[in-house]
Length: 490
Ligand code: NAP
Image (cartoon, rainbow, N blue to C red; front, top):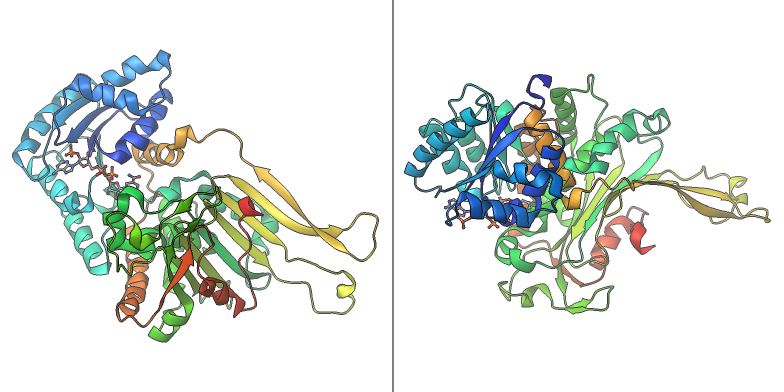
């Protein structure tokens, strides 16, 4: 893993004029450049640019500091390229070889496909045909989400990519795995014996993972209406957070051992019958409503570029069981949605209640202990405990012990991409998803989609600005639980 650390690299940035590149990737590269990572970049897209006009696009996309910016921008080159025209890959090879020699990059190449998914296979095939993947250095393919739209399409895409790259050379991005507090789940669990010793069904009653947005569909309407919250959020980000929260400690903290443990979690998720899918997975769609800032917003079906009869879900709440020794009987609830009360991603671990012994009910109003991992926008932890009310006997009051990461590591919102790109330069794929993780997750999602397609599961509506439909609350209420309020709305 270390042999590639900080090795000079050529980055071939496909989709160089696109939203993701401009909002995140150039800022991330700038941060890495300031951290002494050596590289040169060839930007690739159809629209015409000179090297100079491309450099000014890159410059406009970042928050520069004068000292470094000139040399950084001079490393950016541009070549107009249409993925569907293989001949443009021939001139790309020539330019790549030249830049490789000019910057002594040793043939190390990152092919970053920041492209619409329909181009992933063709891009890889054209890279191979033009000889760009025959390089004396190492090569890594970075591939954005979504990786397929169901198990068969993901399998086909994977087979196509394996014709060109080895599994170890494929870096499937799930940018949640680059988030500071998602990466911190392992440290929190495995570097703190006080947590690891109670991290099981004997002490934990349920786990709640929420990722809520206040935004509607916005400019992603076309894509979103064909995708929905289940495939956009649950298949990847939410299931990855379930796996990291639930996995066993790996034998060794190396890439494959960690991924093996995550896969074991996916394999242990209880398969669901059509009936249990109907009762355990809530699908919702927002109607018009008022957001917490007072703005009045349209319902989903009235949004631009959305079919007025669309049944696409903008909200999902689900209950999963992980049938292994550690998690026997512990529900994992996940929920995600658009146009909700607040933007927040957090994991709440609820510990079991005190024993039902009359003596203990001497204390009134005892709340369950909660460990909350704040992933975004706040980064930190809080532990909710009960203490005696001051100057009173008998009654308790809840308190919260908090750790907040104020280190300013957000890198203008590109923090996750800084970490993930840095790993990709180093050849560390731990925080990228391995094919079997993706496949298990798709197979679970496919079973849900198949039942939804039969229209047996109702689409439940919720007002924009709320925390989802009533059925989401009922899902937990049936088990004697409730969603804990998001920390930002407490
Ligand atoms: P985008 O704004 O639509 O950009 C697409 C890029 O592809 C543009 O640079 C476009 O440039 C280029 N392109 C289109 N057709 C091409 C062709 N035939 N040959 C060569 N280049 C072509 O998309 P995006 O939002 O950046 O998303 C890129 C990828 O990242 C997608 O897979 C998306 O799902 C994923 N992603 C994006 C975000 C985000 O926040 N944007 C977040 C997570 C994942 P030209 O028009 O000049 O060719």
